[in-house]
Length: 361
View (cartoon, rainbow, N blue to C red):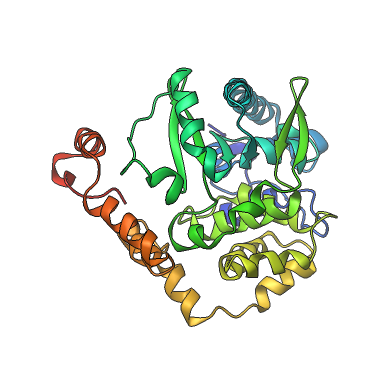
């Protein structure tokens, strides 16, 4: 826990935003610490910024007394140990997929750490995300389960994963979470994304002497903006910082907007990119576009399906049905109304008695 003697009177939220902006063009100085920093390490880690704090301390952007430096160093070491363990799990999972002849793309934390940040130690993360081609989702999940992964929640129907799910969550080596993605978002926007675009023009990064495939920067930006807009109710500042880095990437420009529009995802991309304003850095033309973008009434209705956690699953299901073909709408509705016996049993075991029989939100 951080100690009060080396704190100054600065709002914690604003301080964390400045930390997330560290190193960005035109970013304001971080300037000391909040007055009440008792939970600062906790919130820094929660926002995936412990690596940025360690970098700022090492480079003189944040000045701490010796005890504070030691606390940050210990917290950063713990976060990096977790990242190294997750990288081991990721390499094992990719080996399984390679041996099964299944193409893949690594998403989010591990990929961004190695392709967007100046140094991977700046970016901590808590799970692994792998994108598979639509036709390989079932086979990839089966191969990983055969190799030792555990699926806590069975599919709603035999065809639900490859037809409608955002991702399949597996547990690997105990609590380590491995998300196998079919698309980049739950709900209606996940069904409008053109999935064939996601496996084009892969970028590679080196990990433990191996070349790993991931998305090009423009697709990482679209994914990151969609995730910030539609994922967590409160966006983590580390994810917002990733967006600002991607918006300034030399391979990302206003042409990225065209892809978002083709996916019918311009609205969530704009909403996600608007969050970078709180960082206080020099905005890029892409960020300016986001602030000028006018959300249509249709997109306002779709975005409302993601607004808060209570009832989110039901709202997204209703909104999804409106974008699916009639044939897919029938299969989607049938899976929700009459889920598989294994899925019902797993939900009954995992939910409190008062919630049993309800769909998870």
